[in-house]
Amino acid sequence: MIEELKDRWILGLRGTSVATVSGDPEGSGLAVMLDDGTELKVSGPALLTRGSATAPEVVPLATDELHDLVGATIASAVAFKSGSLRVVFDTGHHLNVPGCEHKSDVRIQKPGDFDWSCKDGVGTMKSLGSSDST
Image 1 (cartoon, rainbow, N blue to C red):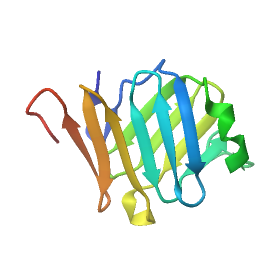
Image 2 (image 1 turned 45 degrees about the vertical axis):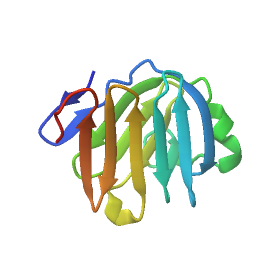
Image 3 (image 1 turned 180 degrees about the vertical axis):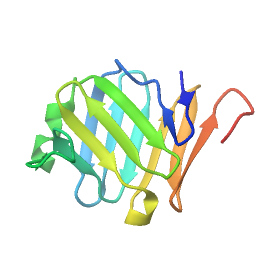
Image 4 (image 1 turned 90 degrees about the vertical axis):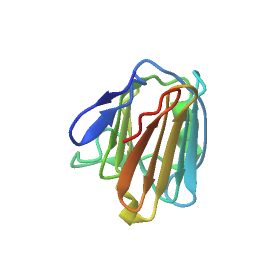
């Protein structure tokens, strides 16, 4: 279930596991498929780290280490109305995508529930199965 706050949406993905992950987070993009059918796609750069992106000695995850995320469970997933995205995994990995002005397009689709995307620095949420959209 999605929870909307003034500046963000809490995506309700807590406890969902990563089924597959592919791509190049520092360049061409990233694709993450969750075990419930949710698909997260980043076209362009994303920051995938071990630990918080704001930690003093943050370590970016190399492309050949993406397999470390398979089986990880989402601890927190927040999409901001500014277009930024933050996903924290139970393994301690963090996925951060700044707003779209940073040359990344992001889309998260959860079948039958929601479709969130970032265009022109604005995050847009469409609730599926109802007429609501923000």
